Structures are given as C-alpha cells and as structure tokens.
Amino acid sequence: MASLACLAAHSVLSRIGAEKVTFETQSPTGSKRDSHQSRGKGSFSVRNEMGTNVYVDDKPAFLRSGNDQLEITRVINGMWQTSGGWGRIERDSAVDAMMRHVDAGFTTFDMADHYGRAEDLYGLFINKVRRERGDEPATGIRGLTKWVPSPVKMTRGVVEAAIDRSRKRMDVMTLDMLQFHWYGYPSTRKIKTLALTNFDTKRLGIILENGIPIVSNQVQHSLVDMRPQQNMSELCQLTGVKLITYGTVMGGLLSNKWLDVNVNVPFMGPKLDTPSLGKYKRMVDAWGGWSLFQELLRTCDKIGRKHGVPISTVAVRYILDQPCVGGSMIGVRLGLSEQLRDSQAIFKIRLDDDDRQNIGRVTAKGKNLMNVIGDCGDEYRG
Image (cartoon, rainbow, N blue to C red; front, top):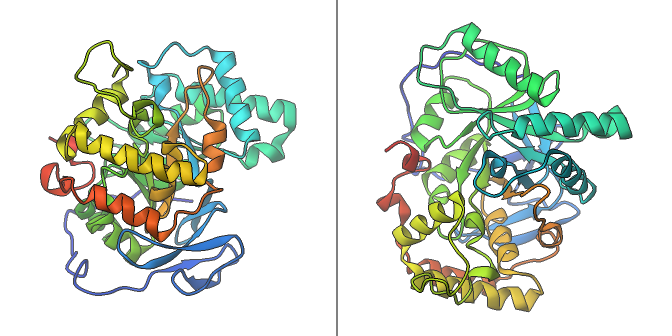
C-alpha cells in the first residue's frame, strides 16, 4: 500500500542529463530485465524519438514503486468528458458503454473528483459488474482517480475525508490509484498506489528524493507536445516512474475529421465546440500554427492509409512507442459516441522507421513547447 508522507522542499537533480543511465524494469515475477536488451513474447522493437531502440509490449503495463504495484491497460479510458461541455450523458447509457469498453479489452478508467459525475458513474458501473458477472471480473478492472485540493492547510482529516469521499462514490474499499496536485499528506492505507498529475521534472524529483513511492506522473503528451521526452523522460528512466499521457489525440484534432479543414473560414467545416478542442487549438497555435498542423495531419493520414488505420491511431501509437510511457488516455463520450475499433487498432499497427522519420520531419518544424510554455504542467501554473 502507498504511504503519503510530508515532503521536504529541496532537489538534487544534477545527475539528470549529466550521465547516461541504464533503465531496468522488473517482471511480474520479480526478476529484473533490461528493457533495451531482452525481448519477451508479444513485444517488438522500435526506434523512439531519442533515436534509440526500445521494446514495446502491448500487454498490460505494470506501474510500480517498491512494494506498490498496479497493472493497467496501455490504452486508458479518460472520463473527463463527463464534466460537461461535450453533450448530456445519460447514466444508464454511460454505464452500458463502460461495460462495452471492458468487453473490448479496455479495463482501465481514469477520472477525478472534479470530473462531474465520473466517480459516481464508475461506482454504478463496478457495482453492475459485481452484480452481473461476479467479484472476480471486477478485480481486473482499474479505477484511477485524482484529487485536486484547494490550496489550504493539509491535515489528516482533510486528506482522509477526500479519500473516503472518492471511495464512497466509486464504491470501492481501496482506491487503485490516487493522483494528486499537492503535498504534505499524512499516512493512509486506503489507496493501493500513489501517483502524480501535471508535476514538472523538478517537483517530481523532490518527491522521489524524499522516498515517496510514486508509480506514475500523468502529463500532456502528443505529436505536437513532446515536452515529456526531454527532462521528464530522463528522470523517469532513472527512477522507473511511468508516464500516463493525456491530450494524445488533442481533443480530437489529431483525426481525419480535421484534415484539410480551414478553421479561418466560418461555417465551412467542423466547429471548435468543446473545451478540449479550444484548448488544443491554442496549443497548435503556440507550436507552429494551423498550416503546419495540416502538414502533420497529411503526413499521419498517408501513414494511416499505408497501415489501414485512421490518423488518431497513428498519433496514439507514436506516443505509446516513446520511452517511459506506460499508457495513453483516450477520452470516452460514454453513451454518445465510441471509437472502440480505432482503439483496438492501436495494438495492431507497427510504425516503421520511415513512418517515424516522416513524422519527425514535420514535428521538427514546430517550436519546442518547453521554450514556449515551460515544463510539463506549467501551462496550469501560470
């Protein structure tokens, strides 16, 4: 079980970028293996953004720190679209859609205490699984939640009340994972694994140096936003922390729907009518603008037609192939629309060197968002 402890405010990150490290992963049986040397059944070799060969396994990812461990699917159902702005979600239809995602093999759900009814819907869903299929199938489903507290003094009572609130809403005895934006937490044994969301490299280093068992950091990561493959990736390779990515299809912008669309001409194409589309359009503007983005879409479309998959599938596969990425989230509009076939296709394609080089030639024309925005999550810190 994860232990939440008070953190000191200092960091020693001089090793990051100053020395070459060997990153080892540990198999479920406990034996260590070098991820750059051994190759298990079901894995394949790719050349990543850093120009080195890594082996990508489409089996579930294991997030671990010390004795804390959690198995998740590499494509994660993101439930932020239950928070409003994407259409009215009907409860029973949403729960039925969650069941279909599980039946399709996508058994990991990501939510937060502030994502509208997300935790409540998960509670109804997991209860239905137990009732209709039994306790054993329910144990293979993962519910990852977040706690984003107000900047107030943290006490044991405040922390435990928040954790208990999520446990009650999700109808679970123990949270599979708690991802948080804060520090100074007393110990608790009501969560299995402890993780972060939108922490930058420096603050992640502070936490790890103080012995806090962090298994993952959830960050924005896409073909446009490659910031996590700079300082953050180096630290994660050194420590074994995995990255869970969001914004990987940029709210739907990285899709065939937006190919050859001129957003400057009103009423001539789809609208930027959701919070995510507006957010990631601003990210495109910061990166290099709509014309360059269209070049990226055309490149991904050509690659997608070569493999028989849509643009979004190419975009997710590329990020899953990057170092330290444990899983990528795809937003689910429960009961409104589904892309299960496209998601399943992510595990059927293998991007080759030509594919990655063609994508790289376009992305190299864009700005380095580390210089424009800052490190991972800095866009939320002002």
